[in-house]
Length: 181
Image 1 (cartoon, one colour):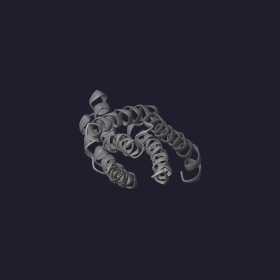
Image 2: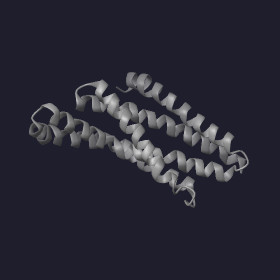
Image 3: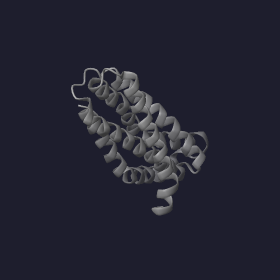
């Protein structure tokens, strides 16, 4: 039974890496849509954290009743990955519609800002909610497998995901931008 623990923790470390890679990518894309990278970072941070909180709240109530939390976790990570792959195309379509019809109709000022921020939020909210569902599901799995030391296993789970997030920021913000653009 203990042999599965490293696999679960590595999966959650990689989840942290990818989550912050997504966040970095979203900030760069939305900077183009919003016209300013600071606005993009603010909206991504608000929606990312708010969406994660919402996702955790939605699944947290049900995680004890999920028969196979690891399977639900894997499925959700798969859907998040599909969103990650499709994001460029979704963004391109949404921004084309926005620039062709929504932004001209908003005619500047506050309506334009509201339209931009709403579109930006809508582009990252679904993935953020799904990302928020991963911790409760992985927590349910490790707690079922290792009930004798809940504090230790949850702390290690949180640590691995946080470490993954730090690695993701470094990879996305510095290494990948220099290598891929």
